Each structure stands twice: as structure tokens, then as C-alpha cells.
Length: 131
Image (cartoon, rainbow, N blue to C red):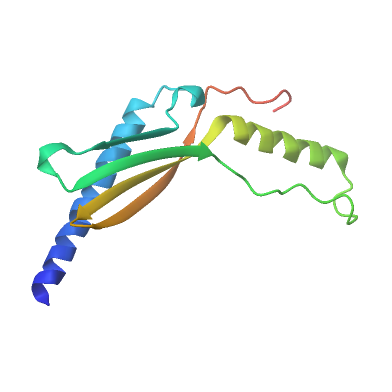
């Protein structure tokens, strides 16, 4: 009962620490990087200090929802608005990535995954003309 709760609490504390550590490392390593320079996938371990824990980093394009009004429904007939929203969506596709950092805890044949996500923005990407 209580020993299990203590172990679980300790595990959560370690996972939180390791997630924070990997996030800080990722941000420091990629601070001046362009989107193209960031690895899409990466993985490793935390060494002998945390032998039951490994990590994964996965990046993917940041998908913004389709906010362009539907012309067929008679919504948003303003072509300028449609053009602006389309341009913004295209810019986000080129300049923004979602980054997922996962810490995996393996004990015996059981693996638990803990993931946090953040957004990476390539501030060096030029804004489209007119912005």
C-alpha cells in the first residue's frame, strides 16, 4: 500500500525532473537553429544515474486548424481575408514545429510513457510580403 505510493511518487518526481532536463537541453541545442536543422526524431538514455529511464524526441509540422471561411457556404466572401488567412497558415507550416519529448520508464516487462509538448518557432523565417 504505502510503499507502492512512495515508489509511484518518487517515479513521478524523477520523470518530471528528466522531462524538464530534456526540454531545457532541446531548447539550448536548437536556440539558433532553423527548422531544417532540427532532427525529426532523436532518442537516448540518461546514463547510469537513471538506468530505467530513456527518452525520445519527435517533431512534426504544427497543424493549425482550417480557419479559412468556406466559400461554398456563402461564408466569408471577402477574398482579402481568405488570402491573409491562407498566407498565415502557409507561414506556420514552414516556421513552426510541434516538439514532443517523452520519458519512458521501464520496470520488468512494463514500460510507462510520459510526454510533454512544446512549440518551436523559427524566427528567422521571413514573413510573407505585406506583413
